[in-house]
Length: 249
Image 1 (cartoon, rainbow, N blue to C red):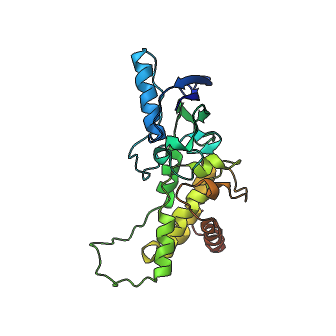
Image 2 (cartoon, rainbow, N blue to C red):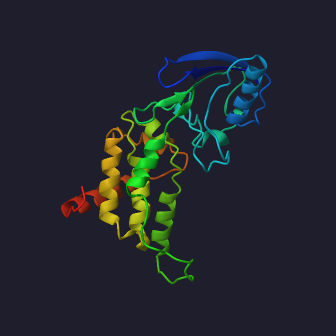
Image 3 (cartoon, rainbow, N blue to C red):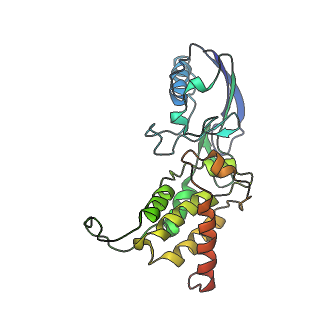
């Protein structure tokens, strides 16, 4: 496959960025999108040019680092992570536009790399449990129904990639925050900080500059882990319940 890439290049957070055009030849349809970028970067290095900076880590669809906007979609046209997106999703001769996440709370660091530490600060505000769980308990020592365990597990599959923020026209982080709040609110270990957690995480989300929920569902439609909008309903319920007897925020 021969492709034309239009890639956002930006030297640093303070410089002006622009789309630059690159032509890549003989791309295997079995390559991942990141492997295609690896090949392009090797060519740029051989020419003495600055390689394209992009985030990546596990390349197994787990870490959520591979954030980039491809042809108008977070992570590209398939509902998966960029590292699991293969070039067979495109056609020979295609032009592909690649940009970084666009959100006030995710400032561009360089090229396709954005600073997503705002998510870390939201987790630090309340996405944890303080109870000492000790060693792994024996099976069935803490009874949890399978329905609840499955719902908590599904919420826990959020990898914090930021696709929900990138997909939302308000750059809202509601789906991310709701997944973290919902997961812990369902489990016995998460009850101690239940009210404090939701109040502090929502307050931090607003402080970091994320927008309000648009109710369009774009976040769930683009989420590579299919995090459900039902978590946002849980977040709203947890928040209203906490505010009714607020002691913290």
